[in-house]
Image: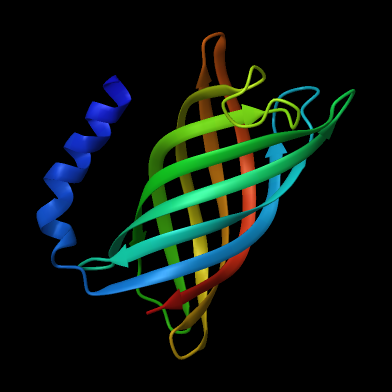
Length: 171
């Protein structure tokens, strides 16, 4: 409940800024999620995002990430993240560097239980990262990014490193 209230407050305070949105964009990407803990499995996945360019190189984006790791005995472990991220781009000729940070929810589940089933686990998630955007056509960018992902569990903190690439379509 506290998370939902915090998200509503953030959206409420940033609402006037969103009203001045200049350009929305869609993104689609793929990548690897590299665990830093012993025994963790490298996961492959993808992402979808909807973003809004604001003023002075700032943007806000909603990102959905989905990773699949092979684990025994169930076969696969699914991890889905829903994140709200703030992005700051810097000037560049043909290449635009950027920083991003955000927070959201990390959900892990086994295929037999499904989302919300008995094998589901969800935790608060925070992310910090950096990347590069390459303009490849009018209204189309290629992005490469690395993020530090912090999942806060009841027993401590888990850190992993998503490495992602994809395209951004500016609408």
